Amino acid sequence: MATTMDHQIVEDLKSAGIDYITSVPCKQLAGVIEVLEETPEIMHMPSNKEDEGMGLCAGAFMGGMKPCIVMQNTALGVVVNTLATLIQFYQIPLPMLISYRGEVGEPVACQVEMALHTKAILNQMHIPTYHFHKPEDSAELPGILEYCQMASKPVAILCDATFWRASA
Amino acid sequence: MIRNDVFQTLKPVISEHLVVCNIGAPSQELHAMDDQPSNFYMLGTMGLASSIGLGLAAAQAKPVIAIDGDGSVLTNLGTLATIGNNPQSNYTLLIIDNGSYGSTGDQPTYAGMNTDLAAVARACGAECVLTVSAEDTAQAVTDAIASDQMTIIVAKCESGNVKVPVIKTNPIVIRERFMEEVRK
Image 1 (cartoon, rainbow over the protein chains, first blue to last red):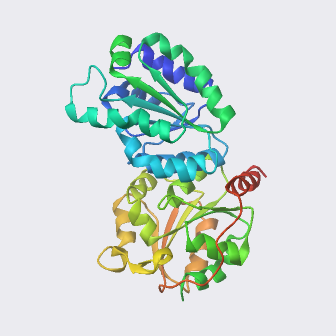
Image 2 (image 1 turned 60 degrees about the vertical axis):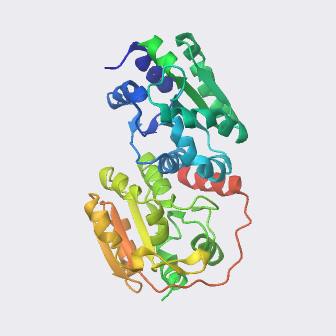
Image 3 (image 1 turned 30 degrees about the vertical axis):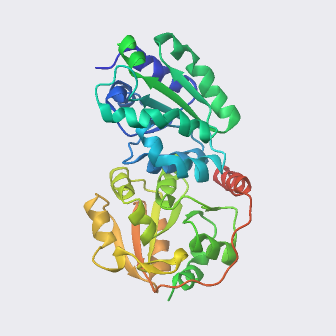
């Protein structure tokens, strides 16, 4: 069941002109994906893997749309090459709405392993990174989305378990 | 016929259209033969030509031809399911199937052995999938562009590359001039 926060996030994406989204699901993102399915202003094209999704986004961008990818942080282990040689090399603005699994409140021990590498990978790749921990942090989303377009870079928005729980 | 021979026959067919071309030898051969601003050359990221092509076709109305290879499609096999479930009538995916990883020394791919990419594409839900010989490829692409149905063409050809220079064009230049063509 989608929350007010899920609706607000999609509203902010819409207001920023985001009209193409690909997603690979995560439990924490289920509400956002549910809202996307009911949002005709945004073309939602799920992908099977996040590098594939970034290819879709690159194509949509060159076709004149404003893409965004919705994914889990574990997928940063999948997309390093694609971020470097496609999104960054060709300077494609790409907001990445990322569920930050493996933080406080995480029930699955294995998720902690990639959580430990999440910010390190983003930092190593010089990707502007924002961490939503409290519901009020999401007030920054419109500004982040505008910044992403201005900079023509991939930008990471990490949303952790505490954020989702407090937003429920 | 090898890939470059197929490209020669394709030149008049695709020259004026938006083309997304696979990394390595395919992009280099296309660039050397017929460099056009309407060509998007992948300088990196193996496997994503078909995904970029699908995103581009979904975003705008002009015909899009993605030139991919059997090895690259195998790298990103999930792409066929995404394409099969999101058909775009302006999209043609041309898989040059020479049964080998051409850019890395012609090592054999599974597509040259037991795996039939056309059958995989059909099983993924794509409705119009053709397997054609190298000689018939240009006609099949011509027909696909003219039709209003998404088409996946698996073009069988021999393994082999020609010696051409690497692409030195700046990636932003490639992207900008390509987007200019999209907007025209």
